[in-house]
Length: 274
Image 1: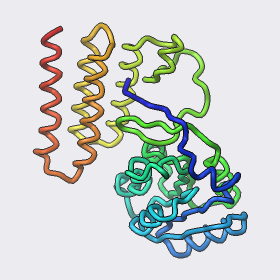
Image 2 (image 1 turned 30 degrees about the vertical axis):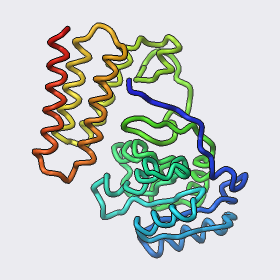
Image 3 (image 1 turned 60 degrees about the vertical axis):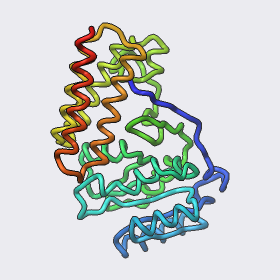
Image 4 (image 1 turned 90 degrees about the vertical axis):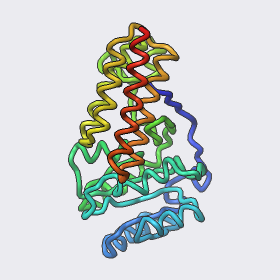
């Protein structure tokens, strides 16, 4: 399901040196004391260049000019809106500057529920680390983040491949083109399974309009008997609608409802032709 494209890492940062210590490390930490502790730990661990920032705006300006080889950023303790809390991660992964889209990102946070970890992963974070930080755990996550991983660009996700181990067996078989190519699952079943995963992800954020999108997609995939380019087109339309809803989060309800209603009308017309 979806037009996922796994591409080789741009790896501009790997040319900066053989280890993460050889690469410029950007630290975004809103707390002054924690920022000093992190930069001190990095320096003691052998980091040659450390660039500290106290705000997202400052960090973004640094990224544009200095192209860091590693980013350590915090999830603000007072920021429960995960879209705003993860804005730097998303701006790196989806920004116009492709030279740093694949830079390893280590996210530190006091929010450690499964939902928060999944949100961080889906935003494109390479590693997630709970606060208060253990020096040993922090340095270990930096080492893990520095291990090259393929970069995936999809309608709703840009970031390091979320699969760290080869999939074994037939269950679960979610949306992966490789699973279809390897004969683990047929295309339609893979799309339906991916729809279930999408429904879970949408329910996690509690957006009424987004839930209508997942219901619409489930209705469509439940009615078709095969999965080809035409069916995939409808899948991509649903995924694109979710992107629109996310980007229009602060817009009036009427704008978001129009996005969903237009999608539902397309599905109604397609189903009437079956």
